[in-house]
Length: 141
Image (cartoon, rainbow, N blue to C red; front, side):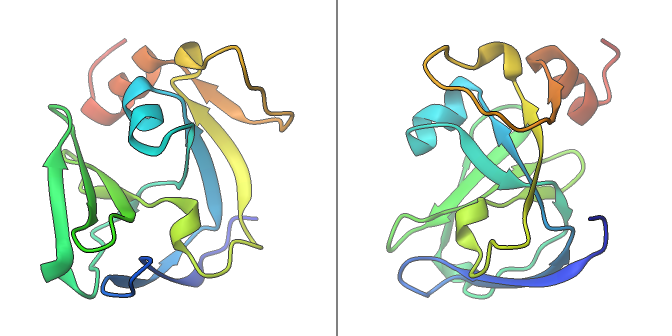
């Protein structure tokens, strides 16, 4: 599935919401920051450029790396996005959206950092830490 569809989502308390057009594809990040942030692998959308959230005043952002920023609702703590600074692409948790029934599991990043205690059976495109950082920063591997 590669067509773009309209998706809606909101945080737990409803103060932050989003409506966007996107490809219904998700990936998983296995990096230590994502696992610490959410308690496990981070299931999220592919990058969506230039998102505008309703309830912007309820969002707190944190610069988690030179090339990334993470944000959450300052009232209920819902994880809202991971933003790649250079491209201004937003990676939104899959669970943020009201209807996940059309999502396809397409990729895994930081595959070389995945702990051994879990495995996914899906066929996905896999990228190592080095490959992913080179992609988002434009650096040669």
